[in-house]
Amino acid sequence: MKFRTSILLAALACSFVGGGLRAQSDDATNKLARDIYKQLIEINTTDSVGSTTVAAEAMAQRLRDAGYAADDVQVIGPNARKGNLVARLRGTGAQKPMLLICHLDVVEARREDWSMDPFQFIEKDGYFYGRGSGDIKDGDAILMTAMIRLKQEGFKPDRDIILALTADEEGGRSNGVEWLIKNHRDLIDAEFILNPDAGDFELDQGKKLLVGVQAAEKLYQDFDVKVTNPGGHSSLPGKENAIYELADGLTRLEHYQFPFELSEVTREYFKREADIVGGSTGADMKAILKTPPDEAAIARLSESPFYNARMRTTCVATRLEGGHANNALPGMARANVNCRILPGHTPDEVQATLEKVLADPNISVSQIVSSGSGLRSNPLSTLQPSVMTAVEKVAAEMWPGVPVVPVLDAGASDGAISRAAGFPTYGIPGVFMDVDDDRSHGRDERIRVASFYEGVDFYYRL
Image 1 (tube, helix red, strand yellow):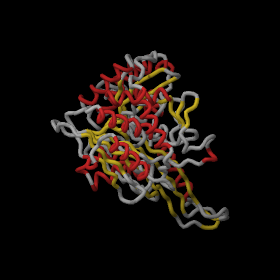
Image 2: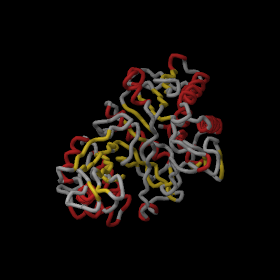
Image 3: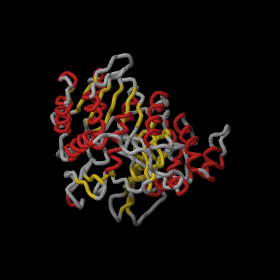
Image 4: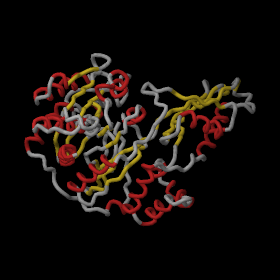
């Protein structure tokens, strides 16, 4: 799930002039990338009726046609519809392999909700349209193009480069990254991972704002918060009322803030962002980096949901249910509380905090196990110099003056699974997305044509 966020600040928007080098890939490379992109968009890979296996097999054939040995290209998975592609470009073996991951599946799309067929690849008015065009079949096509181009050029890296195009990142029961780690780790074992489906390459009104490299993300966890009591006839209300008790507890939660906390990643983020944003906001960012941090600056930055989510764990009520009849006292009331947990903390810790904040022994708190991986930890990825230096070098070549900034994403990607399994993982989109026009998961999903071709060039250089 691509989760790009808007920092739509006027100061930031006017800080940089767009430009830099145009994509340097030749016409043949761009045609190849476009053909792969089109082919992927027009293969339905939804969980309901689609098949990632069909897409994986199509990409496997392209790699074999490009000269990859049969043993270096595999399509494997838990069942016939949930196949994953794993391919390897052989290097000298001087260093441990690098793994590229990107998911093939897409969220559902109904024809009646779109102004066009969501599973038809359309180029119109400077944009590519189609379900998955921005999440994340653009990334699949970009990685595929790089792997084909490197093979055809006879490139011999000092490490193997492994590509894994996977199933069920958006949902379903067969997450490809998790399945490969559990069942075929030997095929994908690597020193680190690059993932186009995370991070933020931000574009505002044609101006490139920043190159955001995701090195951490928050852990998703839902909690069931519930009150039960005997209920009774609504004509005889007493002091016990499950709805009131729950409401009182949720009000206490509304006014609670988890502690302020910075990690290596968020500390570096605010350090670099301070000079980009400038003004009083930039000054506050510098103030929270002091020892001790400036409490007033923390409070001011916390007013922004975007910055607040990067400084602390958040928990918020998202659903309510209560009672069983209009003329009966409620015997039960419950809420779903959705938490996004900072790296280094666990659901058990957050549950203990919720119980303390709700402050009512009649309110029970339990963790809801999702159909996904059920992760129990969310470590951050240390800012590996070799990765950051490479990104900075290529970004400087292509987009001079646009800063590279490490980021923590408040959303979720397959990087959460790979980090928990011990793989340092870096979210690097390669494609600039408009901060006010991110249509991932939405109607008429699209990305800029020029941004796609720049992404093709970026990942090849990287």
